[in-house]
Amino acid sequence: MKPTATFWNLIAKKYIASDVADQAIYERKLAQTQALLKPDWHVLEIGCGSGNTALTHAPFVAQITGIDFAQKMIDHARAQTAERGIDNAVFETKSMDEISVEHPYDAVLMLSVLHLLPQWKQAIRTVYDLTAEGGAFVSSTACLKDMAPFIAKCAPLFSALPVLPSIAGFSQSELLQELRAAGFEIEDYWQVNPKDATFVVARKPLSKAQLARV
Image (cartoon, rainbow, N blue to C red; front, side):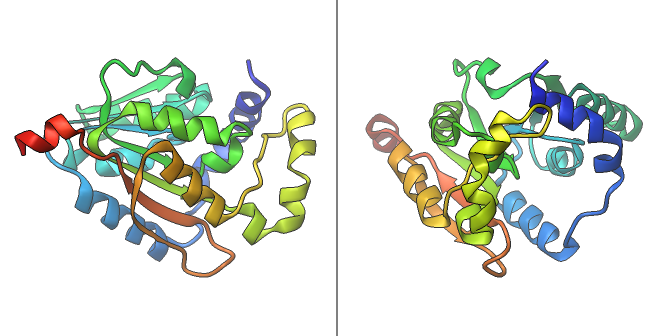
């Protein structure tokens, strides 16, 4: 088991029981995401944690799949799915490297995940491949170079320590630059204040062939 999976399994119970840091901001993100979703869409959430966000979005799409490498998080998400009687949500224990790109998703969500991936640039390119043409990528990311410069400088130390999760230190401008470099078009981005995570809505452009059919 990866050290980061060990960490999240250890804190799963406390994480699941904890309240959302700012309910108003969370609901704003939910509403903006749901405005993008369509009833026939298949959606993927990478790093779904407790599954609460995925289950909240489930009524707006044909199917939503949540993945997380922490088994205890997935166990909770599956239990909640059964308890609520939701039949279009699937939760799997896996990393994003294990997801097939043969059938891209109409939308991919990564909420509070990218800054926990040392190879975050490659992760963005993987997400691009996982997103269908014309599909959406929604992320909420702590840009630590802006929010907490000291922690960002210490990022390599976190990667070297056992159990503790890795972190990646980058700025909001670097995040947006990498999204554009991967091929995404930025539709919207915002943060309530400089110490908050950056919420981004990006779109994978349609190919010339698809544009000709529109």
